[in-house]
Length: 326
Image (cartoon, rainbow, N blue to C red):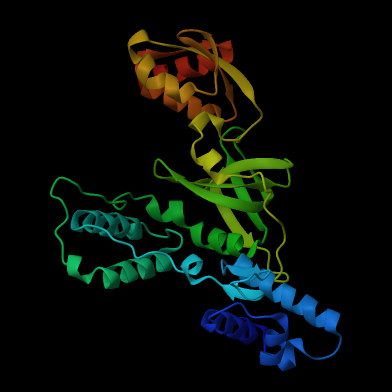
């Protein structure tokens, strides 16, 4: 029996047990797997199998035995199976409409898994369909001419992340105007404001960096030992930290400090976006910037309500951009 079959049989055996199963009973049931050779080796083999199943979310518990319960291993069914998902008709319609819009976006990762999940929801809640989506809500990611180029690299990066394989890219950096070869360990993908961004360990910079996908000119996944991971994601890494980043906080170039002033009537709206900035006074902030282009675009989008105070070089860039629009 191969390992996959053994693990499936072990799950079935423990699920069907009405009371905890002792180690001796497990050996009797799997004589070719856990009852041959040295006892210590058999125990280690079982512990490896048990650890693998627990890592997959199978709650194998061990009961030490009591007056009312036998000693041994068991899978508590109430811990294994999730409660039935119940959604009302409006929630079901919104869910289907939102997921359908996501699927419209060419190259969206895990599209097949999303479609499978939707079919399961439909099968569980057949009485809710067909439903007419609310008339006042429409969602779509299509219509942008650049969507194809923006998502070109999503699937190969998704594949690399699934297998923990490093990638080689040729990347154009706006900050330097240069295209460089980079080796990256991909940690995650973020979709914000219509743009995909790769977050990963940049071997050239020896730090976590962000890479906008539509600036990647070429990409290849490490073909060596395809079943063996090239890297591990640090335990303290959280992709949600990067999804919450402001555009100027994305790590595209060395950090610089920019001071800006916000118009009083816009403070309630814009101050929350500057939560990581140093407040000099109630409307002046010193911002640590690792994506100057992102900050300039943000400032320009708010017209005269955001004023760049320093450094002079950045004020000059703002002035040049505005003069170019005249």
